[in-house]
Length: 400
Image (tube, rainbow, N blue to C red; front, side, top):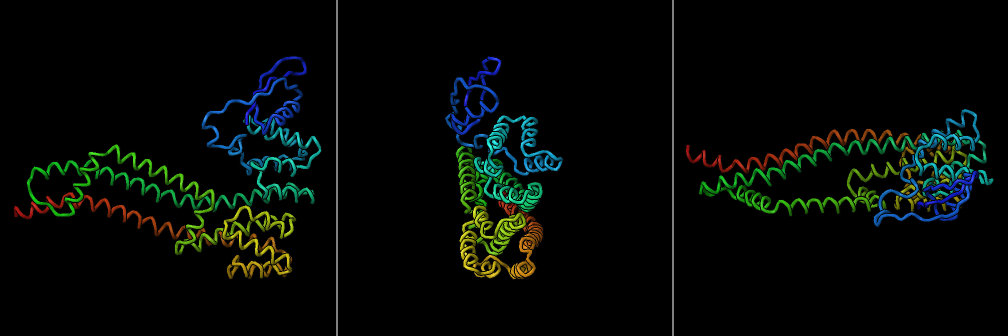
């Protein structure tokens, strides 16, 4: 939430500031951290629909990867964590991110641990990030943990970007094909209808049906466009709701062929997360509890049951196998990791194997699906054109 501040500086000058803070006390503490005295703190008025959209305080604009990369570069240069945050604060131009960095610095200067001040801003720093920082504080190896997180996030983003890229071209084809079909029905077909009406000949049934649709579309163009707009809006809201509650994963899991690949993607993300946490020195049960927050409901149930089995003394490979969290390949790799004592490394390698398999499947799927989609769109447009010209072909045959 934003607050308007009237503050008095050390040289007795009155200043007017606008800052982001959780509450009035947080706003006052930020002002005091700058060496100012807050004379008046007033919440700013927000627009009626201001709560919708991006999160307040710049949560939607904070890139954890970029923040970690900059922090890692400064730590490797020999700066302390406080000096790193001060340097980031000096170069930052966003007021929202300046507020975030100011809170972090204020907490560190109060004697808190870095993981604790990160946890106080849970909307910006997820439990996974806080967990690897907390583990690094125990081993005094924060740069290595940040390196692991950067690699982890970039690998997840790489797979996600491949999936998005594979979906862009079919989406463009659907939009263009739908637009062409709508143009033909709403504009071209009504013109042909006027020509055929004056001919006074009986037309084929399918052609007559198409012309009737064209006349209806021409007479109610505004209504149809409004209905299409409302339908697309409802579809966008529904998809957003499904994404927010994990419904898309559940839906994709029921599609033959796609469901197994969706499961592979989830297992890859789970294994990569667990591998990073184990290599960072976090115990397996604590790592599984952290990973529960990033998986879907189906995987979450199996992961909770596997955690209970491990706490009862079962090995990780057996617990995962009994709860459907393995494939034949990953099960063998987990057993090798248990025997060699490098379970974290084996989990990471299993995730890499899954990522490669997913990439190959995405390439095969797009190479097959895109030509089929183009053929389907061409068939629809071609059918409309043939039905339009069928009466002309019939007339030409009669004249012959």
